Image (cartoon, rainbow, N blue to C red):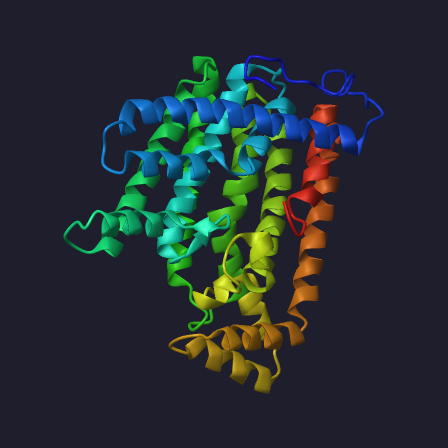
Length: 383
């Protein structure tokens, strides 16, 4: 599908409120088409900005490659939620709304670049992380100074560029001034919550054993709201959605966002590199106090807790240590506990979509169907 083609809606689904009989497959087909559409818009925008800003700078080719991988090479979860918010708020399919929604993927690239530096992640999506590749380029040039420091500093600057471009892409999306005026407060809230959540993430450490409520609040700010709730609200606000729609999407978004982060926490401890694109047990290596790590300690017997504390306090964790930590954590029953927490939130989120109709402001039928599906697929074992 090319960027100038109209979005292919399942017949009779989005605008009339009736199912086309395709059900779940129709939703999945739309999701694939939308990701392609948003990806085309984002690739064009990033390509133009690279030609404008990156041309003739040192490491020009590598910088353009990294920006493409981090900004364009993702799964477009946040743009998908933003666009469904637009539809739920009463917006019609149009190019400007696709571009506006796609701008949230640049915010995601900004977060990923900084996150990899803060977490000292060696990989991202199965490839060496940006700061390491930039450091390698610096060493290859035989330039003076600390290549590692250059790599981290350069990655942060690239993340700043993505943050600037995200706002520019939204502003230049083609939406009306009225739509943008409604959007900016949600856009600002999204960015502010993300930064504060990242700060809390740096403070909370498995060795300090924060409480589960603190960890869940941090996760909600850093990932849950930023991934689901705020993009949904952003899209609905741009479309002029009423207070009932915004409230329903907020409830749904918070619940699915929490379930999404709980799944991410499970993958951060028990996920395989082939699924996550990151090293085995990455959250354990960084001593992150995630919901899984904190809950495992709370559920552990005295002997299990002693072993978990010993591993958390180790100066350096070997592969055997990681496997041991995972084994002890699993034996506490934490996987089943977190799976139940995910299931409860997903069920409540799906139920919450019906409340809009009860209050006289039913959601667009296709948007509601897609949101019900995404509540499950976005919080499953792989997205």
